[in-house]
Length: 113
Image 1 (tube, rainbow, N blue to C red):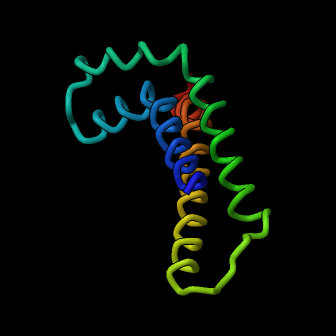
Image 2: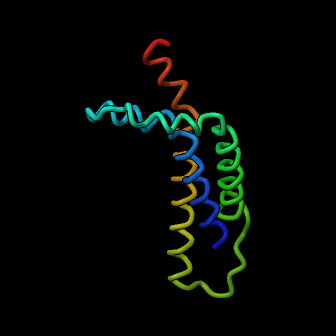
């Protein structure tokens, strides 16, 4: 259960860390004015704190899901499905975290800034 919560915490942290950059870009791509999204710049100074929190949470979830051997008394089908779901959620959180980490730098390379 803790691994699932830490994966979700990593996803939330990645969305918060990338909210200053990804949301305005998506709105521009879909043709919506971004003038009202200037309030998201308030979160930019906290971006690295959100990233650190996300990497710690996903690292804990990765450790518990992939590296540590589970203490299972029985091999129940529900337990196996939940373990696979938890692994998938951890990997998805890690991908979101990588995208939110690298997105501003990739965007700067694309627009030549």
